[in-house]
Image 1 (cartoon, rainbow, N blue to C red):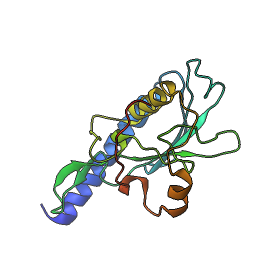
Image 2 (cartoon, rainbow, N blue to C red):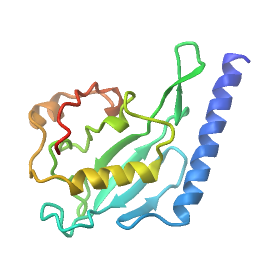
Image 3 (cartoon, one colour):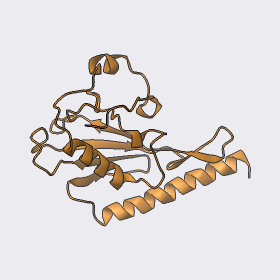
Length: 174
């Protein structure tokens, strides 16, 4: 199969996966997760809220943006053959009534330091729903009303896409 043929196949598989995911989402999402828009197969917006009594997040809703690449959920090797997994790019979006949540793994620009969103922790069995539930769980278990160390410097100096940042995952306690 030619390089062009493999690229087209990857794009069609991505499209089929996203259409199936959207169909599942339209059938219902877990409590605290709602689809805001999925006008195309490249960028979706969902709202999440923490349903327990964590005082840091009580009464708040947060907006997530999902960006899908052409080869989601399975990426390509240097030889254009399927190999590495490709996660969606997931960030929080700040709006008037949707702040960026305070959390030691969430930067003030909405970038989330979560291993399952990186190439080392991503698995193609993950999906939009499971990512939202993982982020809900991350927020639920947090008891620190703070940003990551070096947040201001990181936000000011970072020019990389969230997927291209090589985070060091060292603190599983929050």
